[in-house]
Image 1 (cartoon, rainbow, N blue to C red):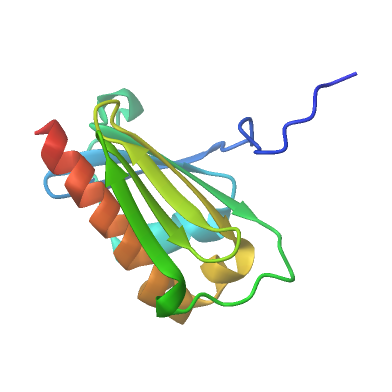
Image 2: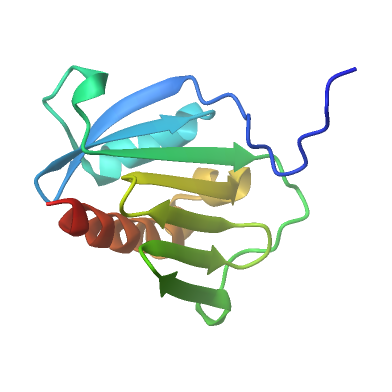
Length: 139
């Protein structure tokens, strides 16, 4: 019998896209085409075609959560210590990264991705902040 994975560490993220931020190539992996599309529109696509040539790897898992309330600015929290950063976007949503490893992971509800205004106002600024700090550390 397969073992339960309550934190979804092994979520399938087979969609990949290369993005450019602060002069660095970032490989974004996701389980959701809408995430790939939103990131592609919001951030500059990288001209690097080799997925192995990325400076940073970001995994974004979009989850189907019908009961998740919209994010409000008062519920965004940011913590950073010893090269690890964590941003909470309220109920069941977070972004985290390990600067030294050059890796980040995000779990967000599907409705945050499909609602373009929420994506642009809440998720994208948090993501850019997290990535810029991490990429600058790698440089």
